[in-house]
Length: 259
Ligand code: IPE
Image 1: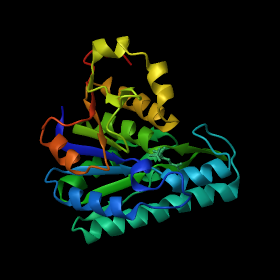
Image 2 (image 1 turned 90 degrees about the vertical axis):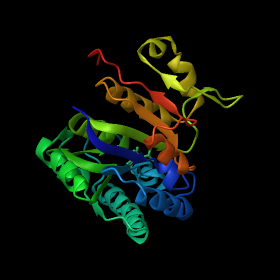
Image 3 (image 1 turned 45 degrees about the vertical axis):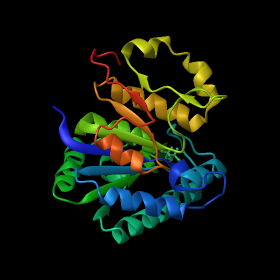
């Protein structure tokens, strides 16, 4: 059953200047924090790595495949995400929310969810705390580590929490049908999903968007709607929560259990 809970990801391309290493977008972080402070519904937040985690994971050749990665790289990538998280948490506190940061390793075992710890996030969110987690490098087994993206974390959390609304904030208006005319696909449902030429669309946008859509469909395949909303226009987030029609892409929850 869906609970009154909002699950939202702040994309790395929204909260950082993605092409400038280690460069937070302070203005956007402040604006988003201000917006999030006005949300009345219990909220669980996830954020991406942008020019923090991604920058270092590329440097140390780390991927989302479990492997024996450079040990120094593991520390550096993790620490860069802690540093970015601290900037966001500080901003959220300044804007009047009560964030509580949790690393993904507190609610995952390797890449598998720890259901009781995820349920705990719901409990604390309902009590007024804003749990916030992030894409990270996680220990998987023996000396194997993996990048666990914020997008994958969204799927892990959504499947357990079954939120009433799931929003990915991105730095564009949604998934583009046509890049030339900047025309977005407003809604993707079970039927249109099959008719969309994903290979064509997805090569038009960043690899980041490709991964995001993949995770969004995993969530939608569990019956939940997923919204891609432009996080650089935070008022759209509030409108989306209120069910007001905005420029965004909605991936309709697929009712059949086709995973
Ligand atoms: C990346 O998380 C985490 C690391 C590289 C450590 P995401 O893949 O979710 O980040 P963005 O949103 O695409 O930047």
